Amino acid sequence: MRGVVERAMRGDREAFGLLVNATSDRMYAIATRILRDADLAEDALQSSLITAWRELPRLRDPDRFEAWIRRLLVHACYAEARRRRQWAGNVRVLPVDGPAAGDDMLSVADRDALDRAFRRLTVEQRAVFVLHHHIGLPLVEIADTLGIPAGTARSRLHYATRLLREAIEADLAPVIPQGRMA
Amino acid sequence: MTESRNPDRLIRAWLDLMPSEAPDRVVSDVLQATETTPQLRALPRLGHWRFPMNRITLIAGVAILAILIGGGLLLSAFRGPSVGNPTLAPTVTPAAVVTPAPTGGPIPAPLQGRWMGSHRDFVSPDAGTSLFLSASSYSMHQSNDNTSARVRGDASSEGSNLHVTAAVGDGCGRLTEGVYGWSLSSSGRVLSITLDHDPCSVRTRNIPGTYWLMACRDPGTDCLGDLDSGTYESQYIRPLLPDGATWSPRFAGVTYTVPDGWANFSDWPGVLGLTTSTDFAKTTPSNVQPLTQLSVFTHATPLTKACSADPVAVTPSSLAAAFTDLDKVKGLTVGATSSLSIGGHQAAFADLTFDAAGAGACGNEISFLKGGGDTLSIGVGARQRLYLVDVGEAGFVAIWLRTPNGTSFDQVVAPAATIAESMSFK
Image 1: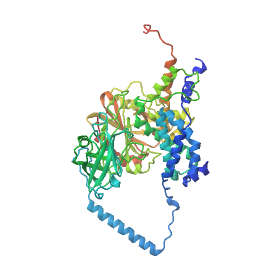
Image 2 (image 1 turned 120 degrees about the horizontal axis):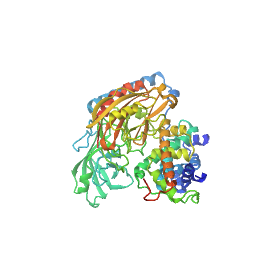
Image 3 (image 1 turned 30 degrees about the horizontal axis):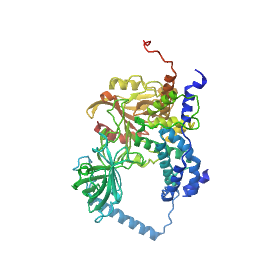
Image 4 (image 1 turned 45 degrees about the vertical axis):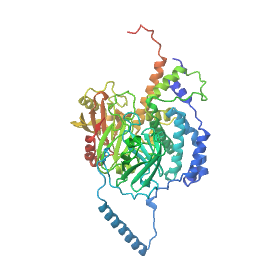
């Protein structure tokens, strides 16, 4: 990988193409989960990859290419999210036709509860949540990737996780019949 | 509860539902774009730099350098002071320093770019606008929606005039031409456009005004970058919006005045960030957070649970109660509080330090305040100042001076205090 990155840093487009092919699926997966919108995720992916191409000669450590490009992607997601203001509530929810759509563990009500709770998160909280729960990055690495203090990463993750857990737990709670509440 | 109904498993399953394969079209577009996108040159490594130079070239080089420096000083003496106190009043006319293009020529390069403007009547109520100028066109947008132009057309330059025609969205047709005067501040950061003549009323209402260059480190982030000394307005932050209310952009949510040497590095619905130009210069498109910052956060709430980022259940009822809550945060030492008024609101500030003994098991960094969707922390050796402003229904606004160490704090606290106390909210 290091050799390919070094070639791309010297302007080798073929090498950059290899890097794009190796990373774009993973990046797109992160962007769709942070932004919850396929069009915005495509824009964020495209914008971050073009920035990566432009900025590659300034990458100081080729071994940190993946963390570096992930940071570019998250910042592109921030920019896209703010442009469209999707966390203000006007989100176009992605169709759930992915490979796991048939998973009967999740009901429509679960998905709806999680979608609604996720929309209440800021894009920064979403980024930390996705990098931790979907990509599996430890908090220290997330903080390093995003250039934020570890405490900030921890608090964003804590808040996001708690909100989503509450959403799903509320959905799981038994329904109290009307007129029986104190 | 069965294992399959475990909330964490459900959340992970929900995350897995989203697509994970990048569309081929996007990848091929990127690879095609690299054909026409030049790479930036690598930054020079000064430690290894050597320049072979004999005595004659050395003398010649020094002479040329002296001429350049002397000429530059002479030029700057004639140029006078840079523009001060930029305001949105259309009467501001900073000195033009760019040589205008000849008749019908392209828009001069220093004008080409993205500019921040105040509210215009073709965007949502209260929202700001942005103006894009290219070599041959102009377009105006709501500030947070740059893909959708509200007014757009051709543009050319003649002397210090800007000619605009063929607008989309102005209802005046292709044949009506408007002429506007322009001038640019000596720093190139403040553009003033004034009406000369234009039969199209939509354009006369919307094009004239003062615009600030949007020069964020990350071009996708809508902030201003380096600032001239003067008074500025934010685009996005809404300090007076009650917590939980639906956000929409409002121009001038925060008005602030800066001296020379400051920059605006972020502007979000809950956070506005200022920093020194020195620290701004060290940021990059992929690392936009400066070490020193004077930032404004909405809906500030102390975090009083030990080693936790959970806010207290009830927002403090007064400034005094808020600082009392902060004083209870393990590992945080709150200095004496001082009262003042900021933007006509009651406010108070205190200096903060980290108390390692008090932090105990909480570690070398503790969180003490939540605001604007972010969490404020302090670590070993840091000194900070926190202002809290009581903005009524919207709770408290925090103005936070964060520095990496005591020396930096001493250097910036005086100008930062002046900036903080200049702020007003809308």
